Length: 159
Image 1 (cartoon, rainbow, N blue to C red):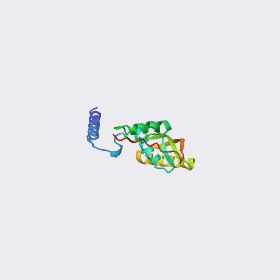
Image 2: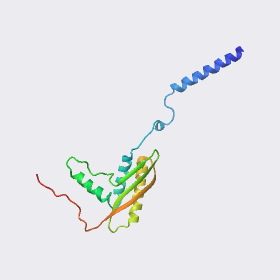
Image 3: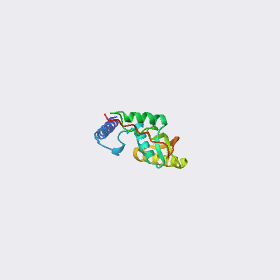
Image 4: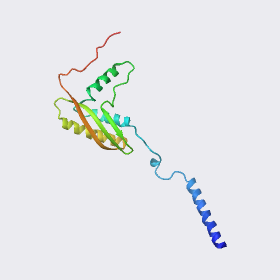
């Protein structure tokens, strides 16, 4: 009996030492894997908005109504600057993202080619910058910018 008790004590002492070693051990493993990173929907929307605007043939982002409200907001003194996220909606999970974009294309360009280029540019930018897998990019073409359409310039008043 004494032998068994001594063996048990030895095993318990080894286990306690092992536990102390594990507790006092600092670091352990890849520093990049310690903790969790979350990315807000708005961050992905900004990345996607910038990437979509970089594509030739994209005149603007968003529907006519959102562009009108945005233009009014841009003219208000002290208002926010042009919204990069206009026309972009993102749903972001822990490892994946899905995006919906609303664009206005220039007259004369192939809508299918512009949509493909936008999709490729957005996926590349979001996956590179955010490290998220982009599962889908849905594109809605809401308007075509005709050459004779005048740009809506606000009248400047001297005060």
